[in-house]
Amino acid sequence: MTSRCGYAAILGAPNAGKSTLLNRLAGAKLSIVTPKAQTTRFRVLGIVMEGETQILLVDTPGIFAPRRRLDRLMVEAAWGGAADADIVLLLVDAGAGLTEAVRGIAAGLQGERQRRCWLVLNKIDRVATQQLLPLTAALNTLMPFERSFMISAASGDGVGALREALAAAMPPGPHLYPEDDLTDLPDRLLAAEIVREQIFLQTTAEIPYAVTVETESFRTLADGAIRIEAVIYVARGGQKAILIGEKGRRIRTIGSRAREALAAILEAPVHLFLHVKERPGWDEETARLRALGLE
Image (tube, rainbow, N blue to C red; front, top):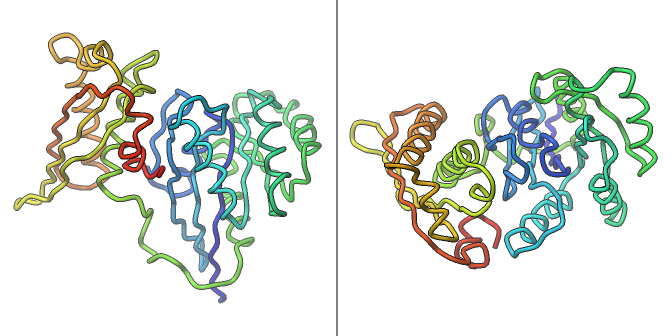
């Protein structure tokens, strides 16, 4: 049987479900997921084996109107993922429908070089069935999608058919990664992302968007446990106080839940130590952005 290998980029507006789809296709938690928009900040690669085919899935940040340097680099990372892909999956939230954001992304795809684009209508379990075909037809007027799919990334409905179609569409060629690899994401970056996920889940308002997390130390101990030290940078002192919480309760909750998640992913006991530091303007610093893989 001929081996196949290729890239499929998942593109869409914030909160369309891109990371949820990546995790569902990969069968493992590779990209953090929260109910809040703009959770993903950089490209995450998921390596999926389907028969003799290796599908290299690229989860990208949501495309939105950027304001700060971090935002601009996130959007550039998304378009960069699409530019390098054999197939682009435009993921659309069925509940949100044909928004201006979706129109803008479709226009951007048409302005690039000719590429294969598939429409993937997500969250179909939240929309009346009779609305799906008209919405799909309306979306197909934006640009010539090669194929259209209806799925629920959260439940898995329709995802198997999408994975099989992707495998069949990948070009012939050797596999680029070992078959038992799931991602190329370094453990240090994974640890920082899991901590950031808990910050998104445990805080509100501007706090999740005003922080970044960097792993300062990641080492395996003699007993097989993993010791991780991470620093959380905030833009202002008031944000630091909110993040730590009264008598340190919030930061302890963030650390405890991140530790549990990391232990499950890394399949080893984890000792996690978090430090919160105030650093105004971190989202404009080259060093901080480079740590996110955005420079």
